Amino acid sequence: MKAVNDEVNPRHPNDTVTLAPDVLLTIARKATLSVPGVLRMGSIPGGADRLFRRAPAANGVQIAVDEGTVTAHLYVVADPTVNLREMCVEVQKAVTRSIRELLSMKVESVNVHVEDVDFGLHTEPEA
Image 1 (cartoon, rainbow, N blue to C red):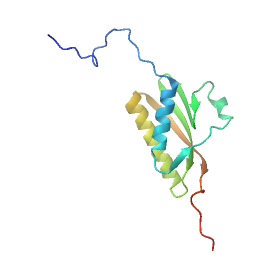
Image 2: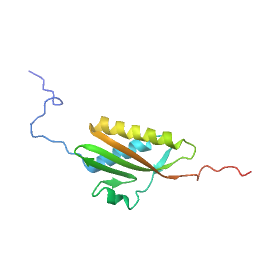
Image 3: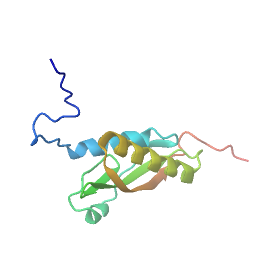
Image 4: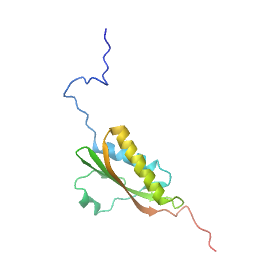
């Protein structure tokens, strides 16, 4: 009896795979939060909706997909003890890598917006 490898040979030529928009949002959010220095996701500014008509957005992540290519806008609140530029570059790398590896989609750009720096836990001693 010959073994059939379903991973290589689709069961039917018309089989499709559909991903809900929330899948992209979750992957981008989890990848962003995994970067040291990102304390939490920020809020998406109200005017940003005009830039991406009907683009999925939630929890500080806004995603646009055009012909299979992803553009992401990430809004974060950062730890004041980290280098913000380096943190943002690491967020871009993590999100790009996650989308490429998990979804095999092209990533056009990952834009990181630092909405705030939370000094709540870090107080400087007064002189």
